[in-house]
Amino acid sequence: MNSEFELIDLFNQIGSKYYKENGVIIPPGDDCAVFKSKKKIVTSVDASVEGIHFLKNTNPQDIAYRSIAVAISDIAAMGCKPLAFSLSVTSPSQNRAWFEDFALGTNEIANQFEIPLIGGDLTRGPLNIGVIVYGSPFNKNILRRDGAKPGDFICISTEVGKGAKGLKDLKNKISDSPFIKYYLRPTPKIELGKKISELANACIDTSDGLLVDMQKMLKASNCGGKIYLDKIPVISNIEDLNLGDDYDLCFTIPKDKFTDDFIKIGEVSKSKEIKLISNKGYDVKIAGYEHF
Amino acid sequence: MNSEFELIDLFNQIGSKYYKENGVIIPPGDDCAVFKSKKKIVTSVDASVEGIHFLKNTNPQDIAYRSIAVAISDIAAMGCKPLAFSLSVTSPSQNRAWFEDFALGTNEIANQFEIPLIGGDLTRGPLNIGVIVYGSPFNKNILRRDGAKPGDFICISTEVGKGAKGLKDLKNKISDSPFIKYYLRPTPKIELGKKISELANACIDTSDGLLVDMQKMLKASNCGGKIYLDKIPVISNIEDLNLGDDYDLCFTIPKDKFTDDFIKIGEVSKSKEIKLISNKGYDVKIAGYEHF
Image (tube, rainbow over all chains, first blue to last red; front, side, top):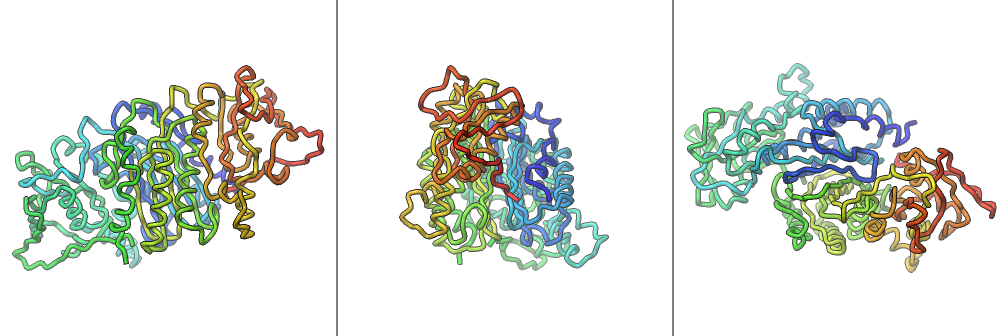
């Protein structure tokens, strides 16, 4: 049997080599963590729940990595740099091996993104991983979802549907599927966010489905758009546009700042309508992932 | 049936009148919230789980209030001022009435402590309320638990056991018990934290039990202490010292800064031993609430 305190010890030093450069003053162990930043602070929280955000019996290392990655993705969507994160782990198990594996995944992504774990809470109950991320702008600009302007090109950076295909292959036990890693280990697009932070007018991450997330961005911006379905690269089929788990960025960029590094999938329009256009006869409605 | 987005709308404006004075730049609705502070940022996360931190069938208004209050208590323990909070609500229900009640409790404590809700996540699963709080020092000083010095007086501010008595009376359906409010609606000691922030050497909140929390503070400070059990005011009996749910502050203060506003319960010693002293024959061991 392991006490809460012995288990917490597994997490105490994760990312500690980044305390100083990321402004951490009081690391985990007190009632609060303390950090400082001369810049604005961006922050977000994401809960990952067993059976909803990851399958039952997922390796705890993957659970940790994935739960933290999807939270960092929100920092990427703001065009910002992650500074630190906190964890709230509710777990039915007090099995030390489970927590050791979970700490491994936590350590892995902390080192990949060079961010320290600055606080947390460990409690008993049905498995629920809460991840809180803190970040700040790379330069000055913070991307918002409400800044799209008519005439902007609507862009993404990669094929749509890799995460969903990974989930499907995982369920079907296709263990050598090259897509499973996109589901279990999504890569937050921090570098892309940095690159577009001085170029784009609006941005959102595509966690719930490309079309529905794009719709949120355009609605928040009081705009609509023409979407060229034929130009959107998909992994499986056109329904990929309504599947979640991709964690790419969808952003709008003034025409003169567009480069071939990005995939143009449409244009922002003044009219609030979102027109899905296809010459190939694709017929798809906007219907992304519902959390309820 | 209510969509995630309709339910989120219930929370959109909570504490919005405090955005400006508390430095909120981007409120809920984007991928991250954004705020700024010239001071250091203190932050903490607390999960409240049904059956562990609150009883089944607790009124959602009380669940919200209590979950947020216990998180704010961590800001009080640092001697800091709360600035804002975020919520991660995992719920099996999508019942609008439940969420309306939950939003009422959220609104109530947001207004009481003058803090805006700046972000959140809503997902499906067994009931789990994650609360993230952000604060900053009132003046310059941030209280830590590792600053106790030999010779300091160990203090609290009120009787021990009110929260535990409230829980007991609630379980026993003693509906007119004056203690239930201490359990369902604990008051974070922000004003006390402010008052002692320039006086105390160390501080912790007593969420897990006075003795065990005091022990954490003394251990973190590499000290021990003499505790005068006879001097500690308790509600039920000496076992109250090992019961959680009080959310008072336990702090150490140099002898010359002690005033009668505080209740002295012991003295910090150089020896790492914690001596529990009683002339009345009280026999109690340190054994607080274990989260597992």
